[in-house]
Image 1 (cartoon, rainbow, N blue to C red):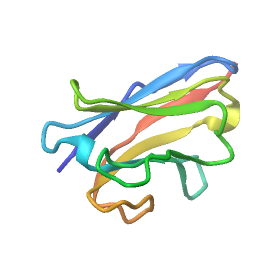
Image 2: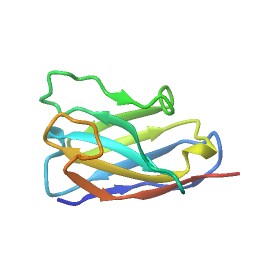
Image 3: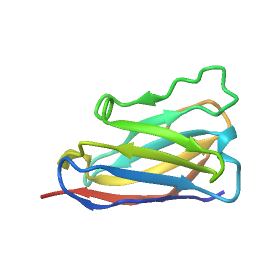
Image 4: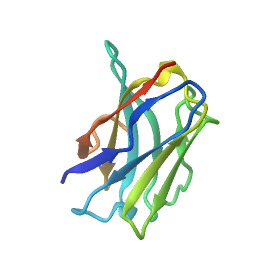
Length: 123
């Protein structure tokens, strides 16, 4: 299963960006979806995770570094999950990845990953 993250680009500090995670292989509604990022020279970190629609816990997790500035949402008609990021900062510069797992997990060992999309925040 290959996920496709898209929507990255070069933006200025304070701008907003919406990343998309899509696939035709699975129905994303039934999977927990995680967003991760890796900045140059740093390890991969969790940005946030949204549980599947069947999860008993419907709370979405956000890392402290993006909490209040980011929103993860689903569009089931498009089988797509979005990461909306506002008030972008230079430290948000990274390659962003999405991942999916039928287990209700939010971790680096999620089963299905996509190629990342580059986000660069610079003036």
